[in-house]
Length: 112
Length: 115
Image (tube, rainbow over all chains, first blue to last red; front, side, top):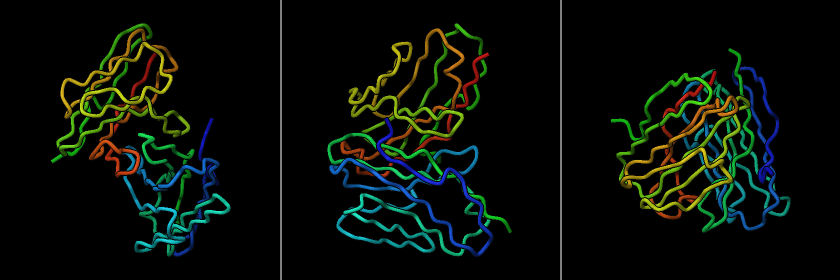
């Protein structure tokens, strides 16, 4: 059973547009929410992460929004660039869990 | 300087064969993982080792056997390969024992195709 539900499965955005990926979870013990970026033929790499004590975290063009009461978090990619074309995975974990629960992934295609 | 390396990068083999994938990290991390990524890109953890000790075994068939000779290496041996084992296998590592809350560094993946 998937503990983190991610949507959409794929999205296409024009260069300069905003990409939005949503994730939802049920386990209230989750307290760490990273996003990983994976380019074709490569391993995933940490992009940005948030803990539930803040509602938003921004790093460059990437922003995580977190809604603890709704048990949802999302990734916004502002001013999307062709180089952002990749698969994005949300994930979650609880302290002492020793593992990340990954969402199913969203393939983002940015058209020039 | 590759942080997490895996060999081989590609592996094509026949059903029923036994094969191994090797992983090494030079980051000095204490925890290492094996993940399986299927054709739909879903990432599923298989095993996790902390300081050479198994801490996660996620209902993986016992045809899969990890071995950690030291904390810098985590190898994966697969017996009696089946068609459904075709996937990309990723090794990863993280700094300490609380690997779930720390950045995981992934290797480049091993693409296994069972014919």
